[in-house]
Image (tube, rainbow, N blue to C red):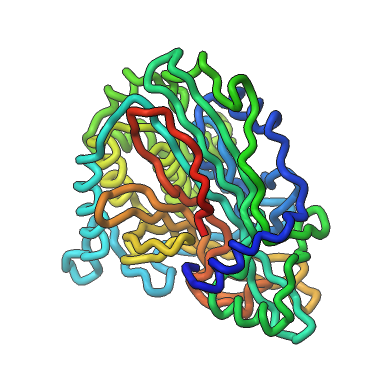
Length: 407
């Protein structure tokens, strides 16, 4: 996605046609949830019904994937060894018993995570986006990334040192260089009308300004000192041992709880659902809280060791950054309004990407593995939806949201 065409389109910034989200509602939701974490829930669409048959991403307290059946789609999960191009990596070795270099790359990145700094304020700059297919009079549809938002939050390490929340809408744009060429061929429209759960939504190619709510331009001076429902002391006391972290955060019971399964019902998530849940659980912790460096490394190692989680080598995230990745098993999504008017299906999987040089979390994304349905013209590796961390770090001065757009 890092192309000059994309940059030029972003800098043009015609007016955003979708109404902006209510910052007061966003603020109230954040205060209600207290902690922030990634949640992928096929049954829960973002405000405005922007998604159709795919995984929206939002913040909630200690959220993890809820892999129940969606009303609009039928989801069937296939075996964890079924992802094309993904070697079996359970236990860190391939079928032949040789060392899995893909998993070793993730573990090496975890070692880098042990050296992360600390400071007085923790801040996170996160981007969320959704892909849509735009029909064109040329007969050659193209993909755009729309429903894109950037959120910037910071929290003081101690209670009473403040916290703040900001949000802005980002330009919709063609997803790849190929899509940009098809967009130009279609006349370079400055807005995109796409189908969503609510019918149709139109996205423009201009960013909005940062907006916030609360006292002092979005800053709550009473805040700070709590992250994902944990105090700084609780965070400091997190173990670094992968097995201990797995027992606390990555259990089968935890995955079932995330799916809303009643422990008394005897129902449990499938191994494939549990693997996806664990990916999002780790993303929630690494992306939403200043987990101490050694505990961050332990979480990465714990996730890499989970059944059904595969190391898939190097992946480029939606911001064009190269990293090492782990993935869940494929799932099949069947939609009732395929190109032929009947049922059609595509396959995708959840992928979590880490910076190989620092061990930092880069993104979590729903990635196409087998084209079909509305994505029949797309290629494997196409990102259906994503949540990417632009920056997450400590600083000793009060952070400010960046003026420059990410693309």
